Every structure is written in structure tokens, then in C-alpha cells.
Amino acid sequence: MDDNSVNHVRHLREVEGLSIRQTAEVLGLSRKKTTRLIRQGGVLGRKRSSILKDYERLIQEWYEAYPSLKATQVYDRLLTYGFTGGYTVVKEYTRPYRRKKKRIYHELTFLPGEEGQVDWMERAFSFGTVYGFVFILSYSRYLYCRFYPRHSMEFFLEGHQEAYGEIGGVPRRGRYDNLKSVVIRRRPETVYNGQFLDFAAHYGFSIHLCTPGRANEKGRVERVIADIGRFLSADTFSDLDDLNRKVTLWRRERNGKVHRTTGRAPSEMLEEENLRPLPRIAYKASRVKTAMVTPTGFVHFETNRYSAPSKYSHRACSLAIYPRHIEIVMDNRIIASHRRSFLKHQTIEHPLHREKALAVTPHFKHQRILQLIRGMDEAAALFLKRLEADGADPMEASYVLFKLLRRASKATLLSALRQANSLGTVKVDYIVKLLHPSEAGTKPVYPQDPKLLAIKYERRDLTNYDDLV
Image (cartoon, rainbow, N blue to C red; front, side, top):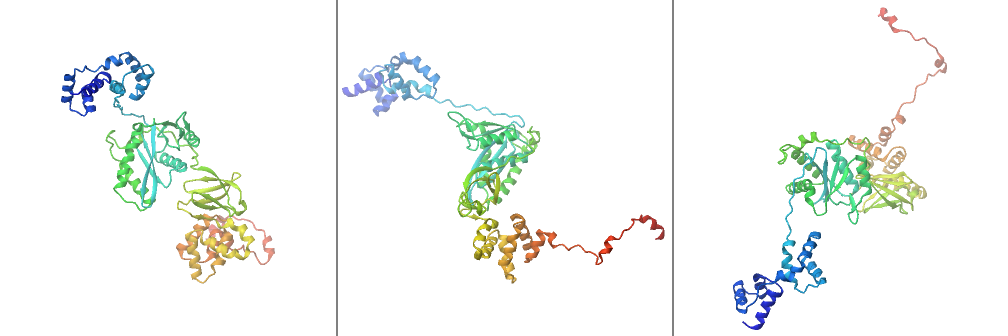
């Protein structure tokens, strides 16, 4: 055994304080051969205790104050106290402190009506990516779930409202992960989403946030999300409506089955939930953002364009965004309302919003009105197509329909057109009579001789004539 090997072994054992196993790993030798080298070279045993003896109290205090300290951090601290040993001896000495103790989780128990746990889940299908709002009552394990095309605030609020409506009340506390719809940030101080705080105050429940990294704190909703995922993997769905229909059937069956922990069905235990009553007035499930009406009279939202009356062009406005429709608001007044489209690059337009532009360009007026009415809805396009096939002028008919929009809402007109289509009629007069029956009624009949209106008569009791019958 050469002197270099002996010196290397002596340094590892006496200075670094390594064990025989660690020394063997550094040298790339077996334990047996390393032990033989130590004996032959007269190497002393490791001196870890003597090297760190003066620092043991410090190390213990550091780990009591900061249990997650790394060995490198302890070593750097020791150097400032004049420690002359190596890093390896510090790493070995602090190993017992750094062993992570397995956390012991206690099963959480809840009172009836105490809590509801909420979270989102995301799933991709052939018809697009959708987001599942998952709500479970912590006491009864009653489950509510519905999928939406987005997971923005308006859908988050509607999910709560739909769940509350089904269970017939509101739990006293909602438990949430760190969702942006609930909390903006956690550090340095917790900042809640102002609109959700307002929503919670309206329904009278408190907000409980889970500790970051502690998924077990909302274990009920985490487990049920996994169950929903397994159900979705075992079936196929044609569209969002089909998905929600099948999920509803599945969860109703699940709510009716005996739960493995409680030994009772969630639908049965739901009757015991001590829920807060629903408020008389529902909260508006919407969010608001600022926008600008373009020179051509449109407001852009997501990738789509929604029309506003052309007289409001170049002006700032607000968008009230609901799950199924959008309102354009200016000076606290709704100037336009449209169904919400979740397709991309769509133009949603109301014919009357172009009335000012039509007056400026009268030679395009009738052609543009025909285009607007046709593009209003499939029902309008079908009615005009059948009307034209019957020999009528679609341009003239569309102008009549356009004028009806001044007194009837777009939804009312479309309803009348759908009824006409279902009956197979292509008469514009039918639509007019349907929307304004008073205009189609008969005029009052007057006597030819006006003197007859001045005749006076005495009302008699008809029972006097009973004996004559």
C-alpha cells in the first residue's frame, strides 16, 4: 500500500470523518479491502464527534428554528463560526435532522351543512377543451358537476348557483384551492378576488383557502375528480350537451349509492344537511370588462365581433359577460344584447344596429336589409328561402320583417319565424298578425243611422219571463 493511498484514507477517516462504507465509496473499493487498508496503515477512527463537538448545540438550535435546512446551508453557517472541517462530515452529522418525517393525516370530519369543496377539472374532447365545475358537500358527499366551455368568473359563479339550486341551500363555508377566481395572491399577504368576496357575502358563506401543496385538505373533491376522470375515459361524447347529460345521469346514480365511508347514500344524507337558505334575489353571474365600439359599429370580445347601434361608434363602453349572452353597456344603459358565441371569428349582428348607415346609403338599403335579416338566424334564412321559392319577393318581405323589429324584440320575431316554418307557411302577413294581432282584428261595427245610438232602454229582470216559458 503506497503512502498516497494511506494519506487519502487517513484524510477521509480522520479529517472528513467518513465511515468505512463512505470511504470505500470514495475510493471505489469494497468495504472488506477498505477495512484492510485502514488496519494496515494504522489509520485512526473517524473523529466526527470531536470535530463538531463544539457546534452540536448550534446545529440543534438551527434545525429547531428551520427544520428544512440543507447540509450546505449548515456548512456555510459553520464556516462563519470558524469551523475547519469538511462538508462531508457536516452532511453525515446532519442527516438525521434532514430525514423527512412522514406526515400523519387525520381524517377530517364535518358537521351537516358546514362545508362544500369546489375545484375545476379540465378535459379535452374531439369537440374542444371543456372545464368541469366540481362541487361536493363535505358531510353527505353529495356531488354536483357540470362542464362549461370556459372556466372564467361568470361560469364559476353560475356553477355555484346551479349547485346551490340543486341541493336547496348554501353550505356555511367553501373550501378552495388557490384559484384565481377566488384569490389573487397569497404572499406577502392574502388578496382575495373582490367579485368573489361580493358573491360570498351575497350568499352568506365564508371562504377557506387550502394551504399551498396540501391537496389532502380538499381530499373529497380531489378524489371525486379522479372518479369523474375514470368515468369520462370509459365513454364517448358527441358534444358539450351530450357530455353534461351523461355526467348528470352518472352522478345521480352515484349519489344514490351507499358511500363506502359513511355507509349511507349521499342523496339520503343530503336531507340532513343544515344549509343556509338561498337569497331571494340571485347574484348576477357575470363579469365586466371595458371595450370600444369600432368605427364600423362593432365591439370585439375574444375572437368575435358583436354589433352596437352605429350611432355609438368610436365610443368607450362596458361589456357585461354572462355565460350565454353579452350586454353592451354605455352610461349605465344597455344599448345592445347578443347571444354569446363560443366559435371563433364570428360576427354577431342585429339588423336594427345598421339603420343609420342604411339611411346614408339608400341605394344599398334593401339589399343590405335582406342580408341582415338572412344572417340573423337559421330560422329567418329558411323562411325567406321558402318564401322566394313560393314566388314572393324576399327583399320586400325582409323589409317588412325589418320594420317589425322596431316594436318587437329579435327573440320574439325569431320565435314567430320558427312557428311559421313549423307550420309550413311563407306569408309575411302571418308573422305580422302573430306579433300584432290587434292590427289584424276587425273594426267595430256602427249602425247606419246614428240616431239609434241615442235610444234609451230599461234593464229588466229576466226571471219575470219564466212563467211564459
